[in-house]
Length: 268
Image 1 (tube, rainbow, N blue to C red):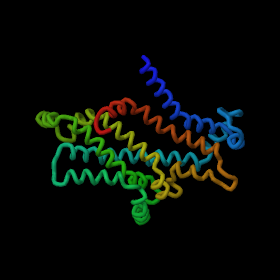
Image 2 (cartoon, rainbow, N blue to C red):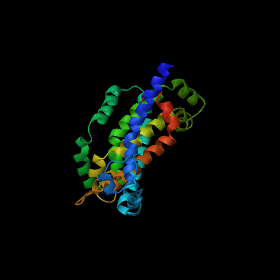
Image 3 (tube, helix red, strand yellow):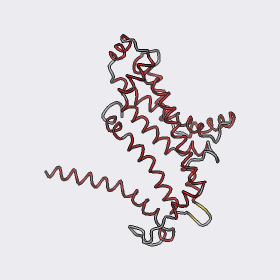
Image 4 (cartoon, rainbow, N blue to C red):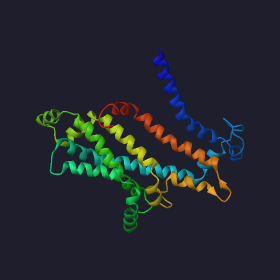
């Protein structure tokens, strides 16, 4: 019983430790700059919604959220469309250099985005893709596709090969078998992959900021504009931070069952 109480106390303390920055961010979002820069307080003395009104009424702010959601959603779709057949090939077939190719994909995930920044910038400027949503979505595939292939290959390898052979004997074509039978069997892996692709694309700043200027500017880059001649607008910046967390929470809510299963299976 004492051991159970100590574990419960430790878990509670850890959760509180994680929630303190989030609470402080929410707390600041309902304060004025004067109160934030004044005395320390655990809750707002005068609750204000002006910081959120600035974001919801200023096109510069809410367009940043729209741009981020657009290119992140595009990246998740492209990543899954590319990674699913690639992971199936690594899982089911053996060919010359397959291990080396698989390792090379992972090295792309290990490389810092700054290494590929200049080539992407010059390429997109030459072909007219600069400052577009598809440009950022394709650039993020550089590190999301290898991760997706690595995760999905682990789930696919756990599916017996006899299922493929039985489906072919029953007259299933490969596309029909892949969509109707195989994908539902690894839906937890797809959910986990979509979750990680969304998160990594959502928080990435260097490529998203450099490859856009106006039309596709993400919210993370717009948040840096709170620094002005009068200082930092801490209240608006905190409100923007709170709203930036919400899409991630929604994604976790929708794929929570798949993520729970996925962490116990595959390569997660």
